[in-house]
Length: 246
Image 1: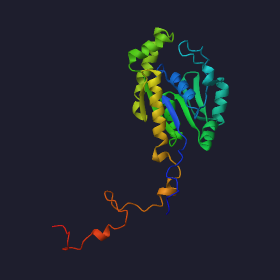
Image 2: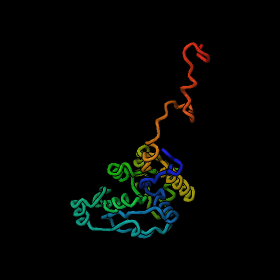
Image 3: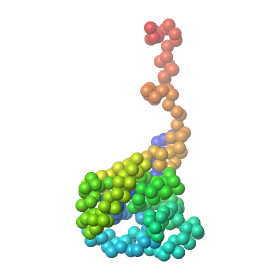
Image 4: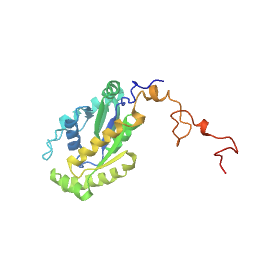
């Protein structure tokens, strides 16, 4: 086989980068910046039955950029139609789900996607798209810092207490993920996410077409021995001859 002009690289299959973790960690802020910094990434808005929230006073994030808001009746109908790749009841009367068609289109067009999920939604997506899904668990530096961030958003003490208890439950899912990112500040988190993406796009298991080149090469017979001139056997002496082991 002549390898002189044969490409030794390969194109990576699409990846679904799921950033999950406790609420108030800063996931949405970091993801918004990541999407702005990397035009190769796409985002699919979830459908939800909850009420639209006011824009966040700190980050400026608007719910309408991240969700389609629908009635409970419409959500139930879409479930019955098989519209969702995954969905979950986050609370009584509050459901959220990800449409299936855009994910299938992303795979067909080799489009990387980013998701802003709870750990539970991440696990649901991974069950259906295990080959594509990359779990990134994002946490604040400490629970005390989480409380400070929630207070800065204007949450009440009752809301902060509830979200802290929910955060402790979310932390139990850490080991289900592939990467851990501590969100000390946005720029550091962005650098880590970019590095994760680069690593995943170079992962051999995620590359298509490698067998076209490497599968045609003879397997190595000795892992510790180079034999560029195919002379290995010539240097093996007969028993008792010159160079024989004592």
